[in-house]
Length: 123
Image (cartoon, rainbow, N blue to C red; front, side, top):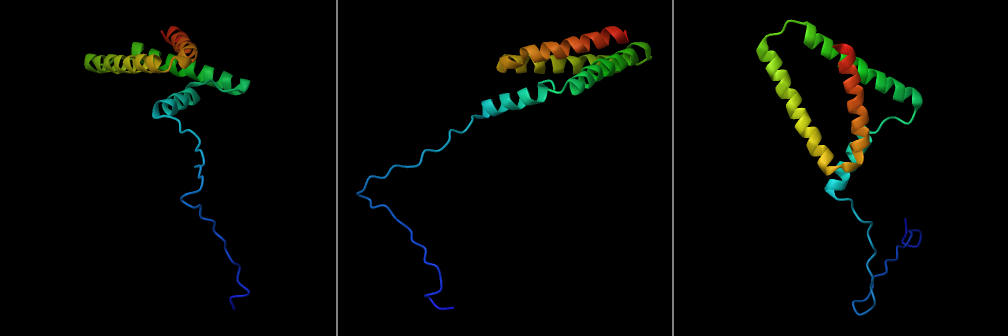
């Protein structure tokens, strides 16, 4: 292959004395903003009505099954204490999330109401 057949690449380099403006970069989202968006995506209810009904009924049913199992199965006291500690840790985690991401309050109250309905059905 000869040099006449190859393509030539031309690169323009700005002079140091010329006016050079850098290309603006798109602003990067902060870590906290990414954290908020991630939790909003996780906790938001589905847009499809059938999926929303399935999700709501699943939340109620699973909570009712766990509640009825915990209430009517004879468990040793230390397992019940471990369960209460587990619930307390999750409640503290939920409070921290609600403090830092106020946009999900309505979503969380909807989910907590479904859990409360499941606890009522299971007991």
